[in-house]
Image (cartoon, rainbow, N blue to C red; front, side, top):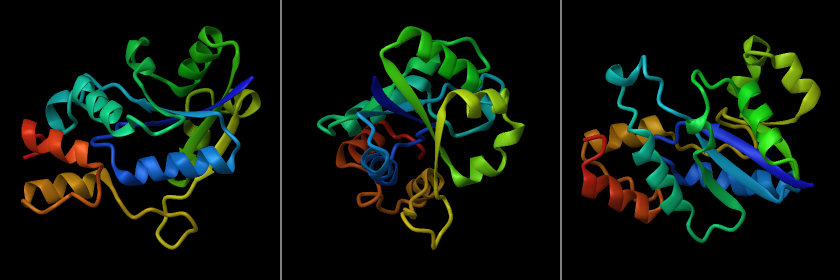
Amino acid sequence: MIRTGIFGGSFNPIHNGHISLARQLKQREGLDEVWLMVSPQNPLKASSTDLLSDEARMEMARKALEGVEGIIACDYEMHLPKPSYTWNTLQALSRDYPEREFVLMIGGDNWQLFDKWYRAADIKTNYQIVVYTRTPGDEGFIDISSTEIRQRIREHRSIRRLVPPVVADIIKEKGYYA
């Protein structure tokens, strides 16, 4: 079995914290790969948010992960029926990739709400779950947020140390988040 971590998020934009965390968890949990599962835009929220299109976020994630061994940008969930519940995604992945064992990677903030998730008990029963920290002061905490990056862009402040250079270039070239 190929042990594959599923690290979901909007990645709006992908940043160095995401990549560092994926690397750390891959090593710590003995995973063969980590798939950064870029979640699809909620059509009901499309007009009221600064969430970039699915294609724009995928492009940045793919470019950011070029040459990063074992960490892969994945658009799988974008091709599933909406809304995309984690249980449905994991079931579809298990069906389509029977040679893989999927491990769900979620932040501590989401873990606190996990019992409210659709089919949470089934997820716990059928999949390993790795909880990572999202609290300042906790071991492994990486103090970068996509929200902060978007704010810095609006304020014309540098994001160079927060995102891979290729992502900074794409954001500047295409005028994202300005």
